[in-house]
Length: 392
Image (cartoon, rainbow, N blue to C red):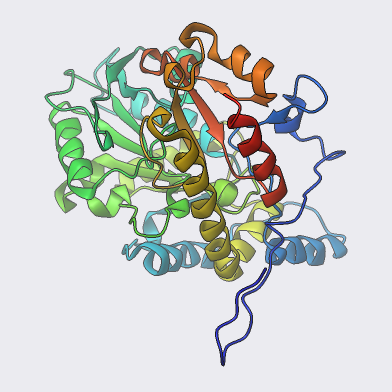
């Protein structure tokens, strides 16, 4: 129910506590349900209604029946900068911003190609990232035929920490999901700065994938890499992000890159053009403008909903939670602590509870014996999940 403070208007109800049926929409997430009654909780995609402002903007644009090539709206750069200032207290120069008509995965692939072609880049220098980590990093490196190395993430009583000690030299790029995927940990700003310094000493560009950065839970602050690092290292730092995860609109691929180094920014734009990708995009710009300009109230309500769901789940599962979530909607679990066989936990959870998850092995060697669950669910469906998990 919407809450009301005396003398104020009721908080808007965005439907997060009502059933939300995605049948007939071609949902990739629900295609993973192996049988009737299975609840898919593996794919990082929210089962919640998106912002009304985005729906209205797309509907208005669709009514104008001109769907030809579009130019990039330069006001979009200032809009991104204002968003970072308002949501994160980060001062982003609009000149750093590239507005891309492709998803973050594609942007990262092209960025890696750009870094590899940079003048003076060491031949066959590896890409480095920690493990457990989003499996897309390894997949992209293999697709681009780039050598890569995975470093273990230390796990302490308060969750994961970024790797300590020197990084391999030379290194072409260091990749990082921030907040961390799969554990939803928000990297402390001081750890991030120190990690950027180690990346620079290894000769690498630090690429921070921050698609979950706007989903930081109340009480936590997300450090935006390009502004959190030492200013002297900004030219060796790139932030990739998108409205896709934040506003549940990943089905229309879009992203933006913050690239402070003008030479790298120009080279990246030229590499993108070689793949037929130019800044702008008709639907992408329409959706992004509406989300960033009008989506704040929806996002605030979403974060309250996610934090409440997190509290209920972590309270139930207790020590099985490897790292307490501080952002996003991801829960990283110790299979053995749940009473599941570590080597086959994904199948066991599906058979015992009818819950589809992501196997920890998809996140590299550091993910063995773990599971990732997505709890961005409407209230009634979350209630069902909790009842099923209580039976473990």
